[in-house]
Length: 310
Figure 1 (cartoon, rainbow, N blue to C red):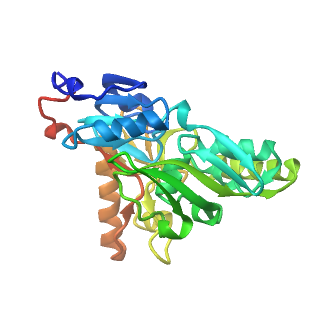
Figure 2 (cartoon, helix red, strand yellow; figure 1 turned 90 degrees about the vertical axis):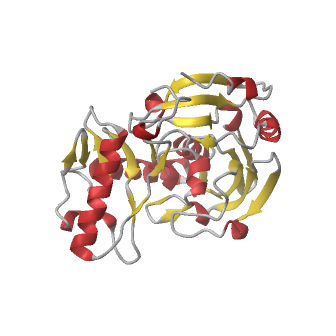
């Protein structure tokens, strides 16, 4: 059962707390255990007040839209935060778009297109939300978030806000320097005037390439491993003989080797074991250590304490 005292420790909010929420329905892999408490803040002020008043000894985890994330079978202790409609606003001004971190990348790209603004087309090929994309400096089709980001607004665990310039973010390949305990709230993105037809053509090409090259119709979390410098992860995986490799209900995609898919019966442990086996085989074959791009959060089932429902 949920720790009976944990809900009593929650500060007063205008959003919503829910106990014992199974997270498999919120992740693209369709696996994962239970969130002890799931919190949907109503807006930025609500989230700020939550952070300002929550006890520092309570674990807090940020869950985006569930892409590029593997929630372990034992679930997530403490409070898991998921940003909703109050963090999906869009403001358009000359040469830039200000967008909430909870907005999906696809929706953001579509709004830009509808307003005749170019530069965000590549976001339509990146699953997930803007906040997650900034966190990992997500990229696709030869562009990254760092190419278009002017600044980002972030909330620290103590409830304070800061506006960070692109330079202060210290972007590198698939990462930035912001603490994992901070949450992105919104971002200013650079855009250019364009023709809606041309923008739509680019986005259509991106959709087609994703459908042809990636297992877009299967339960997956996106690219599993970061490309090592000078190499492509999928080629290393292919050459190590891992295409189609299966552990439990998880499989290395036959279509794209850097994707792991849930065949329908996978557990989070199946997926993590498969990823680690791929890493082992690639290292044995090439001497190169692959690094996870998928964010793995929560606890393993055997680590579950009395405070989590399994």
